[in-house]
Amino acid sequence: MTPPDLPGGGADGLVAAAPQRSPGATTAHAPHATPGSLFDLAGRVALVTGAARGLGHAIAQALADHGARVVLADIDAAGASAAADALAERGARAVSLAADLGDRTSVARLAAQATAAFGRIDTLVCNAGIEGPVGPLGAATEADWRRVMDVNLGGALALCSAVIPPMAERGDGSVVLMSSIAGLRGNRAIGLYALSKAGLAQLARNLAVEWGPSGVRVNAVSPGLVRTPLAAGLLADQAFMARRLAATPLRRVGEPHEIAGVVVMLASRAGGFMHGHNLVVDGGTTIGDGS
Ligand SMILES: NC(=O)c1ccc[n+]([C@@H]2O[C@H](COP(=O)([O-])OP(=O)(O)OC[C@H]3O[C@@H](n4cnc5c(N)ncnc54)[C@H](O)[C@@H]3O)[C@@H](O)[C@H]2O)c1
Image 1 (cartoon, rainbow, N blue to C red):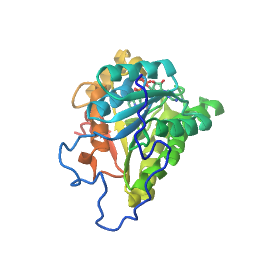
Image 2 (image 1 turned 30 degrees about the horizontal axis):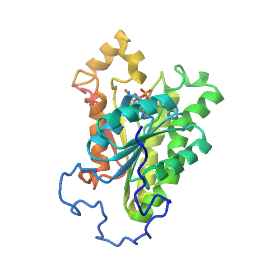
Image 3 (image 1 turned 90 degrees about the vertical axis):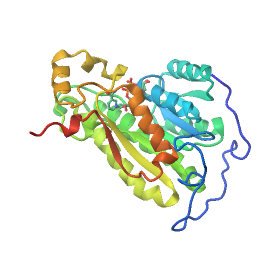
């Protein structure tokens, strides 16, 4: 883990006074404000939750590869630390923090520590998520409900509530909420998960209308099946895979970098006019052949 750098003018949590945005106003990150690559994230700071492995790790790596300094947060402290070390070995500025997104005290601490690490947060990726119980909704317990909703949805809202206001003060920021195509269709197997993911897409729309006028963009990403530890059970289920691939025009599952690239776009000037959207990245699963 590299030591956090504490650039002047922000390490103490103070931010510049909020410019009141007027119609037609630009921000430091507006589409035509700086030359260079549309996907360049040099000088930007990103916080990625669930970054110890899977999509979160790939997203943190892609953001770092495009120049961002990255804070990797995860309930798996050792995993997050190893992931940050791996990024540092590639020359990135990366630190790790332990946090449980299902615990509001832990989320508040994460927001404060992540902001202190590099002086501010420009990009927030709420990626941490759990599958929850498998089976009919009626069999889910109160504890199942609370844990899935707290980790997947409540934790994301709490983190957004802490991280977005300073972005709004600066008139600039990008938030990505990791939803799922499970939130777009009925689901008999992982109903609580699907409910929480549908909630995240709506949360992106709610936050987008709330914070867009202050220059903070909020979007959701809904991956289809992607090769990560979370998906290992499904990937090993031959009957499920036969059904899924037959219904997926690209006839394959996704790879983590194919989700990470979309997040880089949303964090960068390339995605500067994307707002309140739920980007489906699924090889075509949800547009299936209707013939
Ligand atoms: N892999 C897929 O096919 C797929 C598809 C659609 C959506 N997603 C979503 O993408 C996100 C990442 O999925 P993944 O496949 O990389 O999963 P994963 O299980 O491989 O990784 C999830 C990471 O989140 C961390 N995490 C779990 N609970 C946490 C908590 N309470 N606090 C902090 N961190 C916690 C885990 O330790 C792990 O490092 C999830 O929100 C998932 O729902 C995944």
